[in-house]
Image (cartoon, rainbow, N blue to C red; front, side, top):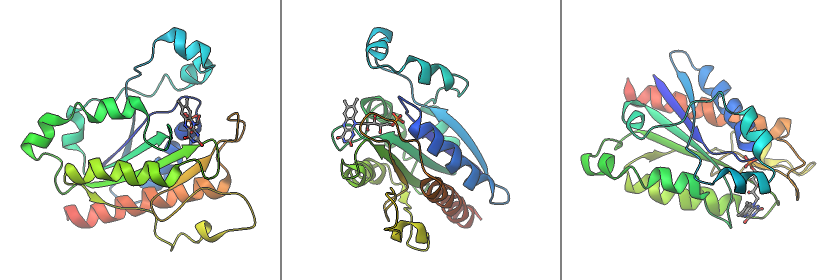
Length: 203
Ligand SMILES: Cc1cc2nc3c(=O)[nH]c(=O)nc-3n(C[C@H](O)[C@H](O)[C@H](O)COP(=O)(O)O)c2cc1C
């Protein structure tokens, strides 16, 4: 069973979460996580001005996602940083190239799930995930979130991302904070949960 983990990450926060999602997926017997980055749309000069080149270099080994491979996946878990409360443009562009798959109904019945990151605690993680779900519903995905059986989302003793909609991380005002253990646990849980449901659907 193939679970695609498709993401965009500018500074590495979503990349780290994607690795934890993949760990969760791979913990389910018979499931294999395949990590893919959506293609960059910004010119190198812009990335340089945004201070993203080192992080981009560190993620260079992850192959680029192609639209075609979506059709062969049993489940797809999408990761995106927040951009003004929505998914990033790179992800939007990738999804906007899936019209052929929509026309053929190729993604109908697959499990779809979303994780996110933002700089600030209330800067749009939930709106990013929920608005992403709209596209998944148009494509016929069966949406899976992060149920409250992941108890780590009840915590108030430390700052943490994560909601019933999906795992998330708070990167800090200037991106100085990497995902906490609790946020990574949420990501692992989501990966496991998606793979377990996909296994039942494909049985
Ligand atoms: C154009 C732009 C818009 C952003 N909008 C928001 C926002 O609405 N709320 C927020 O908390 N962070 C916002 N951010 C911060 C990013 O979400 C943050 O850099 C990202 O989550 C870090 O994850 P990454 O390292 O995987 O890219 C924005 C960043 C950029 C460049």
